Image 1 (cartoon, one colour):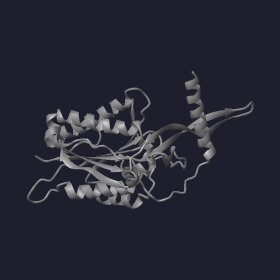
Image 2: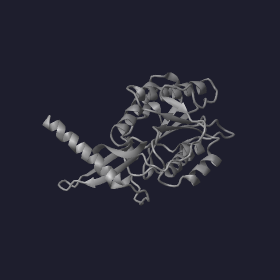
Image 3: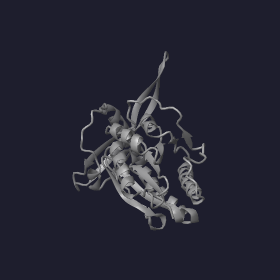
Image 4: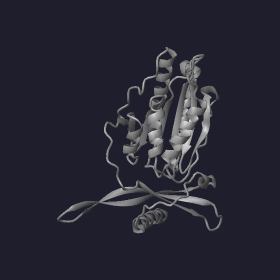
Length: 306
């Protein structure tokens, strides 16, 4: 039986901290449960997971669906897309069987790349290598999780760039269902002896196809601060999400950028292994963060005084 290799390349950068990372883990579990119940997928689909933050590693090598167990995803600082592509290409070279004169190789691999941010390394060389040596031999579907992903970079990788907006209750469940249906449909195509289709019908209530690469924005979507508790010395991460506020006078209105605190999250020491230690030249006025922190503290005081 020819295999259908499916690779999940997952952004595990610090902007995914908290609920987003848990959703991704739960989503993988839901996908695998459904694939195990489908006879076509059970026979042909092999899964692999590549995680990336400040570094990139294969956390699950290519394995058949019945033997696949969704991993605990790491968390790290940085979004090194170039490193992720390097790890993906190495995994394809190592584990995908090519057709020879003596045997039929695997079906064309399918790659689902999920990211919510912009690269913190320079992925140009890896993108060029992918386009020259791998793009014709694999199908990549790049999914931007929210509005902050760098769509212009993703469009350099593949024509199949989707934007997912998790804005309503049940949207993520619909998204997971679409990914699962996509894999199942492609496994059925190869089960009938045909190459898998690039992307099945989109659920346009949650997904949109990017038809033209937009210009890259300079603003960052979030700010994260890492520290250690003075008492326990355990690490933690504070995350601020970018927001806008309308400031109006009698003569004009203007949208002012600010950062609202999203939460404080405990970390383990593995975070530093997965983080990129290089400094960046991105700066922000701390007054924007202080205002957000003061607002959060005052809210907690008000609630406690009731």
